[in-house]
Image (spheres, rainbow, N blue to C red):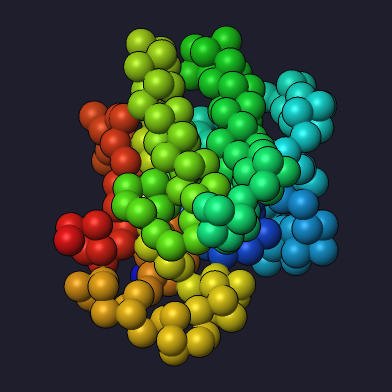
Length: 245
């Protein structure tokens, strides 16, 4: 799936860029003329992505506040941000530990907030309108087994989206979330390979399939673009109808 938008002359930061949805988003943005800073922890994958797309790689651990400050405080203003960095530690609620809960929240919510803070400040200071897209999950909208920490982190991220929409709207900055179903990243393909786990999940999706990374990147491109110029504060399910049940 190719999303055709013209991002020539626009600078966009993508976190979690080394694989999956983040990587597909970087590929689509670069193909559409954007100047992309691709941030992630995997240096080797970032180097490969930079060679393939021409993006600017940035080593960044979004769970580390000082690393975010060091990496982003001196950069020029961006026109857009895609907060895609995320982790999932799946465990039953009765088995959840404080450490695992804090780790998931630290990346999925806290990290996104701290990155958005820097990008939004840069936009405001430069008097530059723009768009922020947070990659959330269907797990923010419905209950899923063994997803307590992950669901809490993504529901909090949707709340962050709404709060930033209100705060940043007067500066011409739009903020939205996308909420995908299981997306077939390399890690997800392995995680959902067991038919006992996979088949009931597929049955619950009206389209009867999981998403491809490009199918999530395309709506992200739309929300970053001028075609979505009056859309802000939205949490958009990309789930084949799963949350319609």
